[in-house]
Each structure stands twice: as structure tokens, then as C-alpha cells.
Amino acid sequence: MEKTTIGWINGAIGMLIFSASLPATRVAVSGFDPVFLTSARAAIAGALALVLVRVVGGQRPQRSDLVSLAVIAFGVVIGFPLLTALALQHVTSAHSLVFIALLPLATASFGVLRGGERPRLAFWLFSLAGSAIVAGFALMGGGEASLVGDLLMVLAVIVCGLGYAEGARLSRRLGGLKVICWALILSLPMMLAIAIATHPDSLAGIGDSAWAGLAYVSVFSMLIGFVFWYRGLALGGIAAVGQLQLLQPFFGLALAASLLGEVVSWSMAVATIAVVACVAGARRFAR
Image (cartoon, rainbow, N blue to C red; front, top):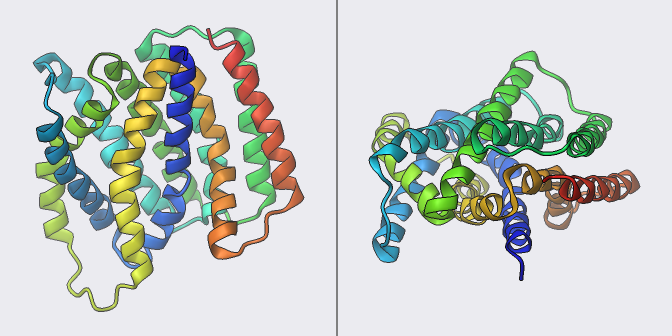
């Protein structure tokens, strides 16, 4: 199997795991403060990362890698989780899809700046078309706008794109597992301290769904998903594999339909087919 194909498979697995992140975060913030949620998920994932690094062993990051790891931690361990948790207090999950649709463009842009990639013009055209389709679908789905929520989501997309591209660049040498593990370990002391300082006064009023949301974003969104995602970006190309994120909102809606019994409209099916075509076109012209 070709390296790029393996990259796309790993990227697809990571994208599927991330598809439930925003719905899980939305559920979790119903019971937890956004700052506590962000720090707790990072602290839990960081503790698991310590165990994984000890078990796996192998090459450790060099001192020169600390800046890159700090950028990754800022982008995907702290920045994106906190900003989206805050935003989801102001906007609906459906409305947030407008901004998640722009994440592939952000990732590709930082891939050019940080990863040295040079996609062709046709790649950018397919990427813009896919982003427009997803954004249009999300806007048709409704949801009240909020200036504060919108600004938070824009910032979340920017820092996440940076964290994705930087992590993919470092994964070419260290591997996806070690990159996310060491980024989590680097941020663990600070995030653990914040979690302790902001923990709820009482756990009695927190529902099972909020605990389930916290568990998912801690183990899957914060750790397992990144192992596949960073490996996919490193092997298949940051700009190319990053286009799989265009499908993330639709899989999230499909998941909501299967678990919550929500109706999936015909427009979702049509939009998904169109986005798949854009992803295929972007892949062809990524290099």
C-alpha cells in the first residue's frame, strides 16, 4: 500500500473521531465550566500520554523541538478546545459548522507556511469550493448568530490550523503518537493546576451526559484522534489530507441522527456528495 494511501486512511479515521468532538463538547459544557472542561480534558489526556510514552519508549523530542511542541499545545491542547467551549455557549453546534468548514483552508495555509508544501492553484479552487458548500449547508440549517461566538470560532479555526500543520511537520520525524503525547505532557503541569483551581464546588448536579462528553473529548478528541490525524497529515500531505475535514460536519450530523434520532435531510446527502467530489479534486492537485 502506498504511503499516501496509508496517510489518507489514517486521516479519515482521525476525522471520524473528531466528528463527535463538537457535539460532545456542547453536551459537556452543559455541566462544566469551559475553563475547567478545557484543563480537565488536557490533564486526563496528559496523564494517559505519560503512560503511553513510558510503555512505547523510543526516541524523545530534542531540545529544538520544544518550540514546535509548545505551538502544538497552544493550538490543539489549549486554544481550540477552550475557544470552541466558550463559543458553544453563544452559538449552536449547527452554526459552528460554518467555521469548521474553514479549517481545511487554515490547515493548508499553515502547511504552506510551516510545512513547506506548495499545492497547485486547482487545489485551492477545490478547497474553496468545498468550504463554500459546507458553510452554505450549515447556514441553511439555521442557528442564531452571535458576534462573540463567531469571533471565538474564527480564532479557534486559526489556532487549530496552526496546531495541525505544526504537529504534522514534527510527526514526519517523531510519529503522530509521540507528537501529541509530548505536547500533552508539556502542558500537563499547567492544565492540571488550572483544573484543580477551577473544579466544580459540587458534582451532584452534573448529569451523566456531561460526564460522557468529558470522557470522550479527553480520551478520543484529545489523544486517540490525534494519533491517526497527525500520522495521516505526515504521510499524505498536510494540505491534501486536511481536506478530509470538509466531511467532518456531515459525519457529525449523521452521528447525531443515529444516536439522537434527528432527521437527516436530502440536502445533507447532496451536499456530502458534492464535498466528496471536492476532496477528490483537491487530493489530485495537492502536489
